Length: 376
Image (cartoon, rainbow, N blue to C red; front, side, top):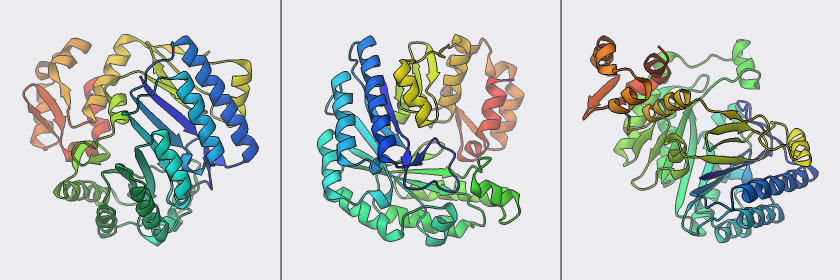
């Protein structure tokens, strides 16, 4: 089982962000901590203090938690779950809140061995456009101090396809990111989420979205560059040096059970799925009411099978045609031979040893391809 904890607090809301988060407030942090402890106790009890394969503290900005809040969280998690010392333990951090070496030492002593650093861009103008609260100096300081604490696994998050961005700016970002010496890079195409300030600015015509052709060049040439630098492109948005692929995310893509604690966290466990209330206040009330998983849905086996096939297609391991036939009852090579031929001719897919994989160009239009295969 994978374990995820949502820490919903941020220094400020970024202009593109639609995640469940709110400004850090000590009273809210205290209430959140008590609610997470209660939720952990509930599932630890009914699952028999299960052993977890990975731990992921996401947000929000988990690195904003002061030492007392982090200590309480870890005490609760370790009391109610069996957390082996050698598992992957990820904490998301922002460069402006990854400065305190004493706090970093506390993370390391608690078992954190992987930090996902929300860099997003290495150009000042782009950071301002995104509403990021950190500077380039913050990035370099955070990386230096994390490595000085012996952190063995550093991941850097970047965003491409910003309004007004050009290929050369994106390539400069990638080159600067590689110079930081990370073990893993996540490169996400910007999604203009409705209601966010950045989306509203684009809709109002205050800035122009990046063109489709330019975005395609960013994705393909950026991926080529990272592979030249020794990173393996193992999932649509993820690149890792050998041995540093995210085990937690791979667990999701492989269909492993996962438990999510905290507001807006999703769980898929023992054939059931549920999502916690999104707002911190609603989540805290659910904890008081002991209303854990009340709206859980039982997953239809066929729907889950298609979901797993979709997730497999997002990764470099691809989808085995035999699995597709077994799970859907359709022979893709027979019923969709014409479609497969067209996709191969356009260099969007490759089929080898009974496995269908998307090419980098295919990953650009993955939603269309996956939808055609799995939801005809």
